[in-house]
Length: 224
Image (cartoon, rainbow, N blue to C red; front, side):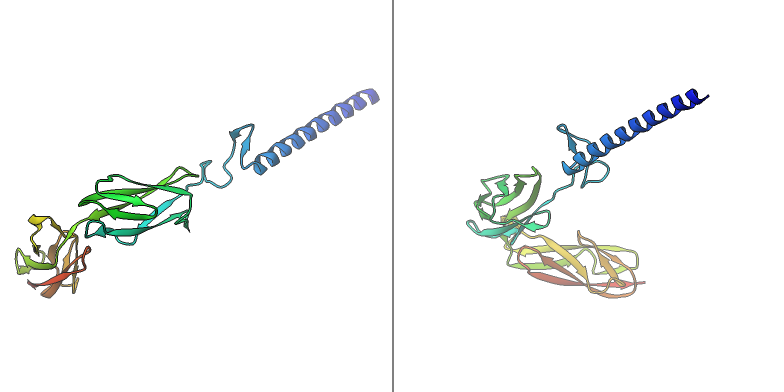
C-alpha cells in the first residue's frame, strides 16, 4: 500500500505542476493581449474599448457658420470636430464638395459658385469616417406674406397656411419656413403649415424664413 500511495502522490504532484504551468501560460497570453490592445499574432482577440467585441465608434462633425449663401462668391467658414475635439485648420481630415459647380472648398472655407445645393464632406484620415453638411446657394426673398385656406375653423378642423414672396419664387427666390403658434392650446401648426383647431379662441401663426430671418403672421379663429 505504501508504494501505491507514493505513486498516487507522484501523479497528483505532476498534475498540479501541469495545471500550474497552464495557468501561468494563460496569464502571460492574457497580459500580452491586453498590453497589445486586444491583438495577438496580428489578430484581434478582444475589444478593449468597444462593447460586444466591436471597434470604438469615431464621429466626425461639420458645422457651417452659414448654411445658406445668398450671393455668388459669398463664403462661409467650416468648423470640424473629430470625437468632440475641434480639429479645424489641422491636417487630420480632408474636405470635398459634392458639386464644385455649386460650391468649392478653399481650406476650411466654402465659396458659392452657382445657385443650388451641395454637400460638403469631411473625412478623417486616421479613422476613415465621414461627416457632412449641406450648403445651399439661394436667391433670397425680401418680403414674406401669409394667407390661409380658412381664417376661421372649428375645433378639430384644419387650415393650410400659404405664403407669397417678393420677388416671386417663380424667379428663383427660395424660402425655408418654420412655423409657430402663439397658443398651442388654441391651435397648433405643423412643419408644413397646417393649422389644427384645439379650443375656441384666436391663435397667431408665425412663419419665419430660415435663410433671411424675415417673417409674417396670420390670425386663425377657432370656434366650437
